[in-house]
Amino acid sequence: MTTSATPPPDPRAIVEGAPAGLDDALAYPFFQSVFDRKSRRMGLGMTMPGTLGYESPYEAVPLSELEEALLLVAGTGLTGLNLGDIDPSMGADALVQWTARTWPSSCSNHGTELFFTNDEGLFFLDMWRLLPEPGEISTLSGKPRDAQVEWILDAVRRSKVKLQDGRAELPTGLPGLFVFNHWNANMPGSTLFLPVSNMTLEYINLLFIYFSPEYRFVLVDETNGYEPCGLQRWIDSGRLDAQRQMGIVEIEQRVLSMQVVEQAFICQNMNLAMQAMGLGGWTYTGYIARFALGGMDVPGLGFTFADAKRGPSVPVGRDGVFEAFVPPYHADMDAAVDAFLEAKWSNYEPDVPKAYLEPDKVTSQIRRPDDETVQIVKDYCRYVHETYGRFPAYLDPMYQRLTCQAQHADLDFYDRYYPPGSYTPQHRHHFDRWHPDLADDEGRPPRRG
Image (cartoon, rainbow, N blue to C red; front, side, top):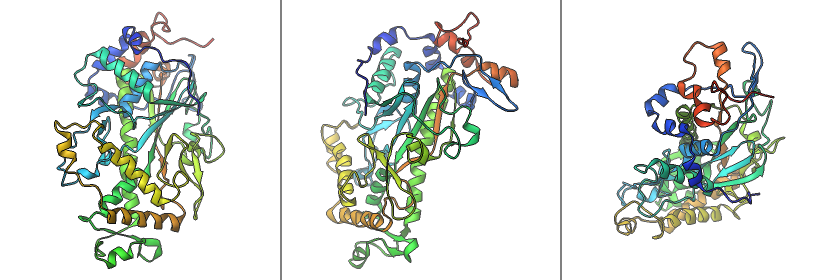
């Protein structure tokens, strides 16, 4: 892993010289952003073949640091402290974190994080470990504009990890990238955002709910005669209820649905921000995840893949950056469960900020899982990993589905092929307001050559 040795600039300097477009974006009505949302795929410097054939006469202009930071924070920024408004005796023990993000997460797991690439490099935004100040319910609301922008730039700089120089090498054709994305995916000047979900974080936390003394579910293996998944002794003892059955496939479908919507929330947030800022871009599913993560013929995001007993190897993490709770990062699934418990319950320590006026009074009443429940979770996880040679059994431990790309739109293309209304005044005046040093007398971006 490489990191830049150049000290980051003072965010106050950028705020003081902020472009007029920043104020336009911050003041843009939310509902107007919703109404304006469209996929605008033609960026500066791109060429589209076919019936809508077009070659952009403009240079590909990358997003500025401020433009990119606004999208990152809109997509997955820290917004303060989770209110945790659940009675301690009725489910507060399910919460994994006490922080709030710009998108909702089941039990505040926040198992989805952003990788992104631009002309300068490939980056990871380590937002999970970023904490607000004690008592800071909201990091941004109610603060003046300059304070907001300083916080945004500082948060991104503190959480941004550079993984390599230069744009990530992702698929440019079949089979790793769908045909209709060949001409514009990951092109110069664009920033490509790839949310990746740690499925094991949500999964293991969910197991502690289903196996708790209140729920007492039994998980069975549909491909093995509906046999209990290493849980027979807990059924025999009466600790689990044999009448409350759920299959591996069903619980993993629940995990999948809860995690993939996180990626959708993040991408939608960035799409709405693009409208307010007058940027082009769109969300798409053109990349085959195995290729994008680096399991085939291109480096992709550089993930490690582990062998399974059935089927191909599975992505388990980017070493030292974003790792699932599975081997090879842990000796076995027992150790992986222990590591999950440490990561979760460390957030309950007194020095971790919480939203309550009297946090100790609340958190002291939150029960931690008893030894039996911990052992049941370990027995199940061990069964799945030993039976299938992987965990989860059917989902990738690290799951990537959606991709969001942002770029400066080439408005000439839309003028040529569409009636008025294909873009907004925010797009028309973007270069005048955000990049006046690059705009010509008519407010257009710089031309090639």
